[in-house]
Length: 222
Image 1 (cartoon, rainbow, N blue to C red):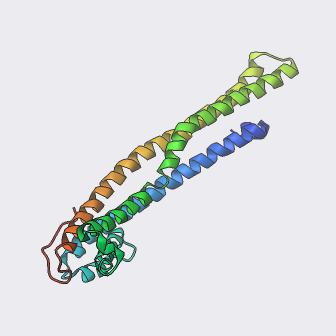
Image 2 (tube, rainbow, N blue to C red; image 1 turned 60 degrees about the horizontal axis):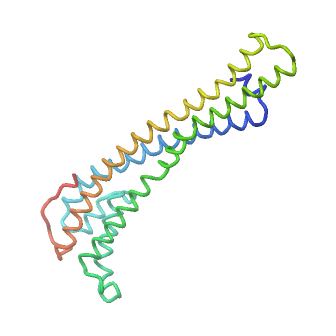
Image 3 (tube, rainbow, N blue to C red; image 1 turned 180 degrees about the vertical axis):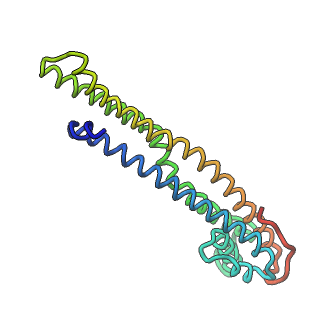
């Protein structure tokens, strides 16, 4: 690896640098997404424990962490009930307007969760080819140097060619975690969003009850 960097030309070094950046980006996204998903799951547990036990929607909203995804959805839902009358929005059925508002909030959460997954998919599909390009270029560079020196013995060929083949291995080492991480995070996102949508459905039912300050039966955000 050290010899590859030391003896490689600009193209080889650039290829290796790209693979390193891909690897760093992959692991950063994996760890940051796991943290984000865990945070939303924790907020879901908080909502299940506190939100539906409150007497009113406003107190229920205040019982959640200010950074909570569930509080964000609750705020958007409550806001939609207070900004429907006396505007052009009156032309939209109240039920439809509340549904749209909650759905938009949920879609924004889903979009935020999905950020970075496209990068993992791109790395998973392109890193092996980037590594293969580095190998082909390294072999070409090595054979050119051997041709100039006029020494084609196996000991002269094996070293440079072997170093060039390392680029393919590096490409695979970058791609495999990206593919596995993409599939794993996608499954975790689905589980998180199932809970978020369940909360949104329950909130929608409460908002349509028409009495936003009265007690209501305990619910489960699943």
